[in-house]
Length: 149
Length: 356
Image (cartoon, rainbow over all chains, first blue to last red; front, side, top):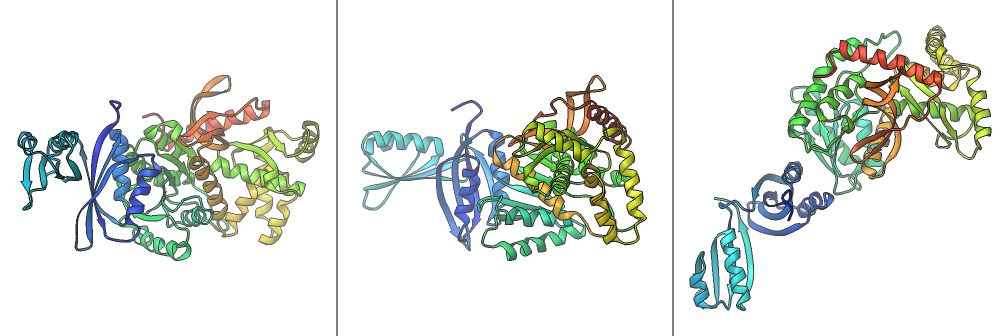
């Protein structure tokens, strides 16, 4: 990645309406910016929050945010640098070895059956733990980025 | 690509909005931003205009967004139509100094907001008058190449149409440009006129016949005389008919003048010329049009590299204008452009423009 291009998360509060996703996708695709990831967070009372990960220069990221904010379906957009330590993540992993889980620098929560674990913590730490577990043969079922707190 | 129309509720703004959608210039994922002013009548009307456009064009409308403050203007192309307009109707004297005094603040407000909050890549197409002042104000703040006044393109389309009508052909078979100042002080570049399907000799013969033995040295006095005669014609229908007796370049000035005097407006012609320019920017290819731009030595006038706003043929692409395409103008054209350019610079300074 060039020094100009950086990774970002956009947390977009959007109305739960038909066409909302298409409108948001159009803003990115018209400007040649690809989603690194997109996930739906809480949906409640007709409003949902999307987390969109993408790479762009700071100028272009600001253009995207200002353009997203002009969409009728969008309530609020928060742009956060991907390296921001306040950004958290949660991962769902199965078939992970206990000794590796002990070494992970993140919160580890087991389900009752013990086959599935949930990892929580700063996004960089969760991603590092997930990468390590994946190499060891664990199955990563989901990784979702949460808004900064 | 997104387009913002500043002053969307005015006659020209509305016509531009309708034309952009009707001609399919904005895709379903694009956004048309209608900009009005909080506190003014347009601040309320702009919401109604949004609904009206959706009513009319729901099958093909882009996202339609409303903004009511300069800071909220967000688009790839910004069309500036805001500000007071020239009054229509018989006997109205056009006071460009007053117009400039009123509109300069509006131009500065939007230009400052775009400079502070914009992407740094918006292309601004200026429709508002005085177009030369508006181009100067925006260009000084945003960069010269991102700002194009549409007056010279409208004059160009009128010039081509008058030539085409005189020859009994359609406008798209005629090319050629108008430079200078928008309106009475336009400079018709007869040397740039081309007629599709004709050899140079054939073209030269026809142009000579259309133009007669006149040069641009007499053009302004011809226009002034024609205006006086038209004004003294007893009824509007006869006045419009009388225009047909004039050469095409004079017709290109006095026909829109009479349209204004008749109480009608030129909103559709202006909107069409503007949408042409918007399409050129959105199209992604460099196309030669005429426009008012802030020059900084790209051409020589009176033997020196010229600085100031002037209507000239330019190559326009997605990032604005790139090059001036004024190749080898005739001596009378160079002379007329120099005179007009000096007048524009004096006016712009008097109106409070000029280098900051």
